[in-house]
Image 1: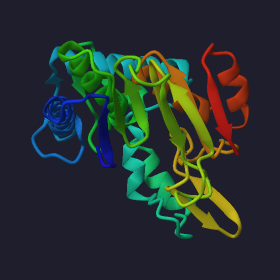
Image 2: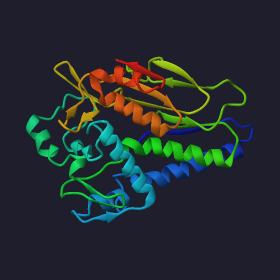
Image 3: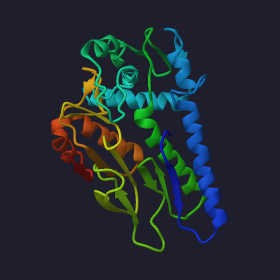
Length: 277
């Protein structure tokens, strides 16, 4: 997942808790192994290295690609799983290493879902392009792990993969799980929000850890794939509550991609949300 992951279980039996945590961890590794862009030979790597040939995908991969296609459409192209190649010029490490416009433009030609051939079963990418399912993969893994725990046990567990999380059921011995949302000032500060979560999921997007600063201007890590540059006016942090982590992540990401209009967009989604600027 590329982040700290934890499973918290409300249980009097340590053995049962470890079993449920192991179940969730195994599913997280399965999703990681199948969909990470960093693993040679997996489904995403096969697509990215096919040199323009069509790759026929399995049903699970097709569902994720269809979902990403829907996000591309409703975001007017701002959510684009081909935009991962922009990491060739952008590294959000807290320095002032902002790329020049020519470098960004050189990579931008390889971005654009409209250039991809996808028929619901097979996909082919023009040479130099690639897909990256990282924008939905972590939330998907949370939901998959939560579902497996729920099918195995009535114990209330919180599945937390890097701040995207879900609970499997209401806690038995307390009103809710208390979840702290990291302050934009950093992990050593008090949480920006403390949220009581008894059901459903939370997802958070922000530039607390991934940003650049040059000449007094802060560049967050969420990039507009149509320009190759970070979204302007985006909140420093957005957290959304929803029935599933995928749904929370979708609304959260689309909110950040809305830039200056983030609060207006989120207000129209019938979801509870929290913004830090």
